[in-house]
Length: 365
Image (tube, rainbow, N blue to C red; front, side, top):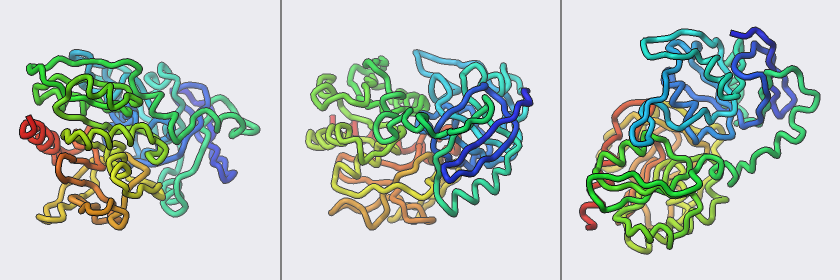
């Protein structure tokens, strides 16, 4: 692994020096942290991390290497998208371990993908700083010192709306199922784990670009519609929110996941706000408000709806006991969850969300 010096520039003027690995380049992003202890390949390929530099709080990252991509019918089995989506990563120690299916080291993978990393960082102190003060814009550089790190780089992305356009497909893709009946998935930056779980239902799946219109969706004569996870500010995504509202008017079953959940709430008149530092972990508890049952869930989001900001006439189904974020909403033809029910990585607690949506679809046919 390379031993070049690397630099992390924070928007408040702080400069943190460490050891570089991965690609010799620099990237701009929002500095966030994840407390996941495993699943770094899945996390780094999660499109919801587009535009963000990710701190891993677990002290050793890279222990089991990186496997070759395995796909079936165009859907990946061991990654969440076709390439790394984080702008860079920050770790305490980057290791070069490999397991039975590890074909490359973390360093080699990041070099191939053009993604910088920085190690030798006190990630505990940096995480505490974000928890106390909130997320920060940053520049991560493996290409030497930068005199004015934020000049021009901050214009690389429109973090409100431009991010989903960079991770959504450009043209529709159809995955044939056992049934000709079709579920439409609006791709806001979908994880392949979601595609895999939806296809288990046997329905044909039509994956459409994020900016598809209601008419384009209805052109597939869908029996249900899914709005996926993805990056960016949901309050700026008017076209996507409007198409979701139209689907509800058509009385079609709708499943919203993460960003899709936020758009569901916005479409119904609820309030979505930016969180201080977000939820990014694989062990976040959510509680069913009616039964009191708890679930351990996987999260990656920086925006949320709190209980007091629910749409008029709607009640929360699932809630975070930590901060009263609305984690699930269920009423009529709408089912939406703030967490990632496919849990890649994570527990299997909430795979039933896909079964619940499938039941809604069957009942509506």
